[in-house]
Image (cartoon, rainbow, N blue to C red; front, top):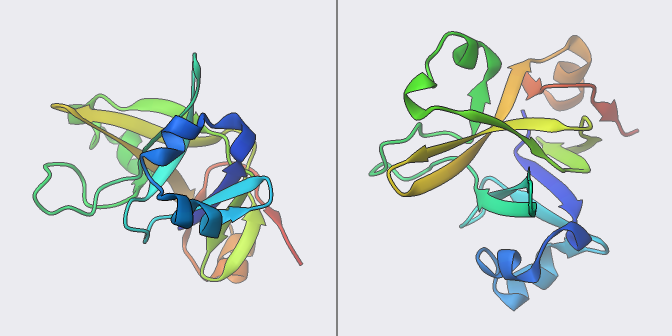
Length: 154
């Protein structure tokens, strides 16, 4: 899976970041030219490439009162089986550099995929996953992984 990501800050309008970080939180999450976002944060978010630049959206759903799936990830198999159809999911690209899972960082696939859904006036993004390769499972201990070629750090 991918419980955290990092991405280049220069792709993001500062107004977008202000939705999710106080200035103190921003400095804590910023690592040089990169910003990190983790699903366990108070306000997790994912960057999404849009026609007019990179926008930030809430990552998944942890609110039991929202009528959206209670997760941050969408299994590729569930999408193919139509379980997300009621939300009219749109496949989007997340411009990430690195992914994080179980205390391990790895280079994310170029063109990391997610789905963007809208329910009433709420938009959320869920990272797409597939069954983990044996290498990913050994590296992170997780049975799900982002879609695409992952590069492992030593």
